[in-house]
Amino acid sequence: MARGRSSDERKASDTSTRLAEWIAEHDIAEVECIVPDMNGVQRGKVLPAGKFLSGVMDGTLRIPGSVFSVSITGEYPDGIGHIVPVTDPDQMMVPDASTICEAPGFKTRTAYVIADAFDRNGAAVAIAPRMILKRVLQLYADKGWKPVIAPEVEFYLVSRNLDPDFPLVPPVGRSGRPETASQPYGLEALNEFEEIIEHIYENCEKAGLDIDTMIHESGAAQLEVNFLHGDPLRLADEVLLFKRIVRQVALEHDVYATFLAKPMSGQPGSAMHIHQSVLEISSGRNIFSRADGRDSSAFRSYIAGLARLLPHVAPMFAPNVNSFRRMRPDSDAPINVQWGSDNRSCGLRIPVSDSANRRIENRLPGADSNPYLAIASSLVCGYIGMIERMIAPKAMEGNAYARARTLPRNLEVALDRFRACRPVRALLGDEFFELFYAIKESELENYQSVISSWEREHLLLRV
Image (tube, rainbow, N blue to C red; front, side):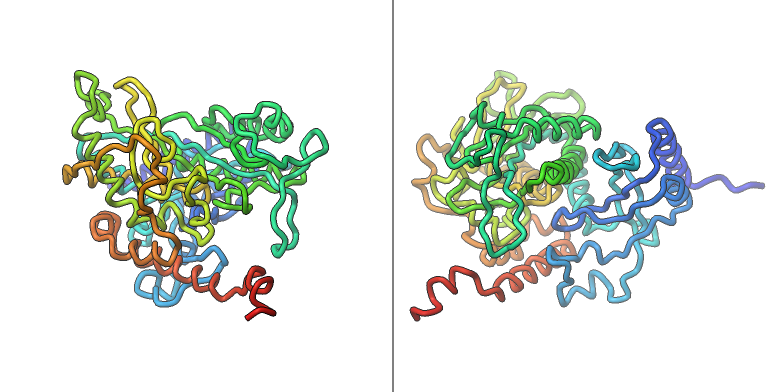
């Protein structure tokens, strides 16, 4: 008697069928199978479409587990052998069929697909950033809740820079001149880069990304794109691919696009603001509002969770040494977690909206953050606030920059707080916390070993 197929085998077959149908319909020749690492860097493999599909079906799409422990400089931190064994066993890449999309800009018709990693026993790799966000979303689902988010991502266009010792400068626009002053919401300033912007929209449409409006931000040649609100995992996937598309388009126009949090001194930093609300799954009701339209207790407790815990998990949304250069007084970036209605000096802003659309805008994350971890950090802090029924501080009505700084000043302080944040650690896991800390500590030590041009300029002949 023939043995029936297991649920895993049926799932693999269904996934393979969906992918095969999509690939055939779009005449795809090659597939990039992507696994996001801790820094949001896209790692993985490029395969001929047929080889990719056979690998999905027979489970032979594999990648070393060490991809989740690579630092931004391509190194591996010490002391993580109990999390990532020195033998570095393969993990199986399992593509999420819902993420497959056309990869614009390639001569050969190519597709992107994002994959999750599983060990040889079929267990999901719990330290993977995409799995961390899935874990947080499951916490909500277990309570009958569904978070909804909408990211706003800022970035700069800059002239090509072949020597890292030289500062970045704005590129020449359509007028033949670079921007030299702030032009927030400037339409003519936006038109300076019309060809690049149209190219970005075109490629995002090909990839099926749900981007909405693009504006000129406060910095010279700084742009911002708004994503339509929706599922947090899908939007994290889209932000990941958006960054890749924007960088590729910029290169085609002989400029760089950078999501560095603070790429130029004297210019504002780049953020990834996250608008967020929570729906009741059974009814679709926004739990941030009461029946009479006023703020609910859940809304206030969510704010309280963000205010109390976000300063302790800053590396998840401000992951690099450069991230903290953005958070300065009167710089369009927060220095604390005050909250207030329609108040952009606050780290937590409550936009004007009706009760059905009541939401919180978390203005803390930088554009340089891993979207999976930045979104997960915000959602998990709000979740803890609601579960523990935390009491929100009084809303801020004036200038939040006049209040004390509560966010860490640098990555070193942020990592110390992160390591000791027990409430979030209990939900995201010891292994993730230890590995993420080790990677970021390694990057910090690497940075601190570099002698900067400022030191050579001001200390070389004077001390």
